[in-house]
Image (tube, protein in one colour):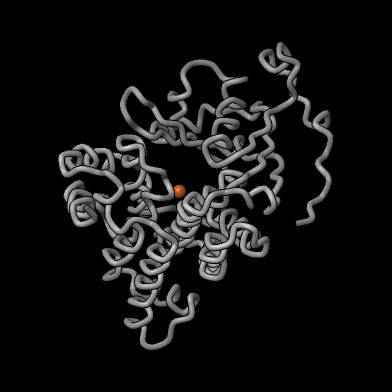
Length: 318
Ligand SMILES: [Fe+2]
């Protein structure tokens, strides 16, 4: 895929004490979502003091992030997280088993190198899990509360890209058209979820922090269930998703078709059908539900979520 030349880093030279000491002009992140997030975290802490967890978005930490964050360049080798074009970094606080979101416009990468050839060696299972993250971003953004027709349009096209290319990318990693489509879906999801995410991500974050499940895998197991759970308040929007993935019929039929499409896609690309199959145990549900309720993503879910709702959703998914 063609991309324009990267401007010389010197044009972004930062002369903060930390970066000047290391004679560094910026940070380049190469890899999946975690390495890209680490790159942003390193850039933040190059010019900011204290613990990174002081910048937790749940504590309104974004207000402490200044504009002197060194420039970050991202080179994604997976397609799912969208971190390559996103304004946040997610860091796990292992002491309290919690994923912490640090958000600021100043964390936005200055340049992203999107090359589908970098993903051709990605194993099918990781392609599937990361792809389900991209699909979940687009689905949750489209269903999220709030008025943002531009994000809605991007999210619907992101869903369509996943419907065309995710299975192909899993089945043939060398399929560059499919890899390119998923690279687009990844970026579109991250742009769209500036509108908000939903309950799937609040359920998924504790599964990674506590049970060490891959983030995309956790989303992939849960997203169809959460779509179904939201259906009584989101039928119109689910119906529009149903149309985008090729469905026909009444709104109710299209809405059911949207859920069925996501469930069947997950199954065909090898996503486990239950949390139990992914190693989660019943004894962990109470703790997971506590953490899910504390997570901020469900604030924009179309239906209010209580701790008991999360407990019921985890239990049903087991
Ligand atoms: Fe995600």
